[in-house]
Image 1: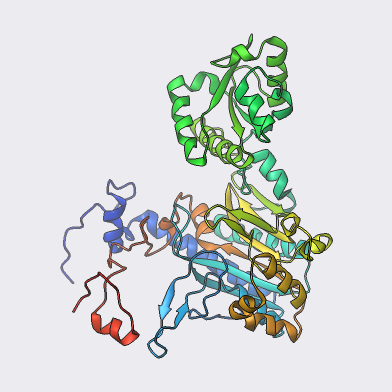
Image 2 (image 1 turned 135 degrees about the vertical axis):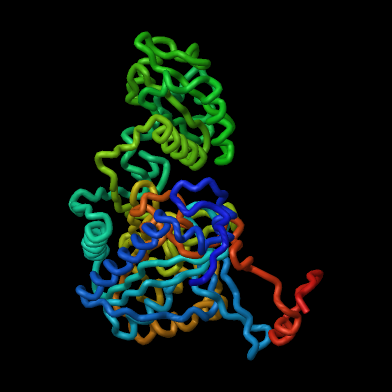
Length: 492
């Protein structure tokens, strides 16, 4: 029997230890019953997913970890080549291009539990390395793929948490409808109130903030929080106003609904008739708290989405009788404008097929940004669970898509020449989806952070406290790779 040191924290659930300490001694943290349960949930999920794929004639094919860097979205993790100094492999952001090539090779049903890597800012449901339940099929429509995935998720839910999912109850929303009603493309349908557009109601209001927002091309929207009038103090509401500044909001207007009408700092701008119109349009009732967003559409959407989630949690308004609320979000814009890159990018990825009726938008002289995509996201309880689409299988459409993204013909061939050449030999119509295994495991395990369902995760700074990765390497290793790191001392 080996002699053991006294653990640095108690091996029990609810232990009073900081996350960094638990990650530093992850091998101790993993002894706790909760962590043992979490990883067993993850294991059952993977077994269920694989069993379903096997029973539906999907072939499990591994794709490379060391691949070519292609400009698809997030930053790549690069791996320098010793054999070819100055050249680099990239760790895959997803197997997207390889699975399309597999369809071209005649494997009509591909599946993989795929490791993916993206160098991007972290948050509670994101890691630099993560795992996808990845599939691709040929000769299936978007509706057929959604039906297949519904059955797949139904089996997973039954096997892992013994929940009988009625796939006919999965709601389908267009992207625009989701943004209008919930301010997000991943709505939590367990929350029993939605965002209401009050722009028409207040466009001639005496309250200049609202009237000017509409006049300047923006919107005025609100949520009516049930019971919020008694729950929140003015100080609480001020804190919420400070919170939404991160989304670009310049303040938070609010009103309390009483039996007599409206009460609050801007109530004087809405006398009886105007006040009743406001209450009716917001679908509010006495005791509700009205929280407003006014200004640019995207800022208002993000602000009210955040407030909707926060207030529902604060007041315990999230529906517990229907704990798993799935939704399909369809008919996405083909492109979206990225503030980070200051240019238009593909809303999903550059290989997404436009709607048939929108193909003409990719022609010379048309506005491609009006096009919508044959894409579909699966959402669960306010989290994006999976993203999928019908892929482009024709060279002419793919070339037009890349041109709309700013690629010259030469740049397109440099980045994606192998894919474009493969298309010239004939690709079948194809589509697929990738479900986030880590996020699904997190939700099924009842956790709020994916680090709780990953054996050895990175922290919020993308470091791994137990092994202290990333670390410096010896100068001899850098020399072998032909690399120099200016201004940084290396280990000798």
